[in-house]
Picture (spheres, rainbow, N blue to C red):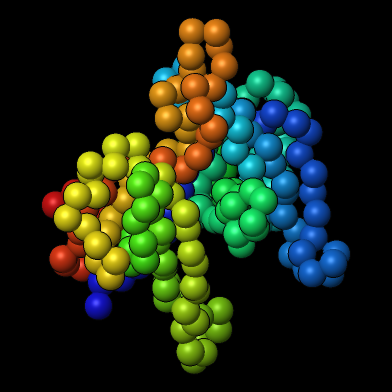
Length: 210
């Protein structure tokens, strides 16, 4: 069985003063709620939302932000989508476990997913992931994390020959389809667009360049 995979990185600047909260109605682990500005003319006026976990990472992020609110960061973690609603569809956000200040670069929000295609309709790609999670304690059974994503194909022709049941690797960005228009507005709604897609037939890790 091909291992399912989920990874995401966001290069951006903090757009609003971060809010620190705690999970489980204030009784659980702390996290930092973030709104990130990832503006780039090529991809549009993109804003990414996510939660940063881990006391040490939260403190490092807040320290860097307070020293310079214009500081750019690279956040690392996973792509997430809230359950679908009839009115708005799925809401895309991020779960972060890594954060580091960086020298300003092309700001962007990217993802790599490996999962099973459950449907293709026009430019819309439905993907299901069943990821095996590492046990929290030695001796515990690994848990399976089930995730469903609604993604959009930048070029629907890229999925020619791909059908439901295929396991695919997709790479893409949170972006407007054609970036910024001549008036400085987004050319289309910002969505998770797939820029590359291929059927997976082996067990190589997506980061393996060999």
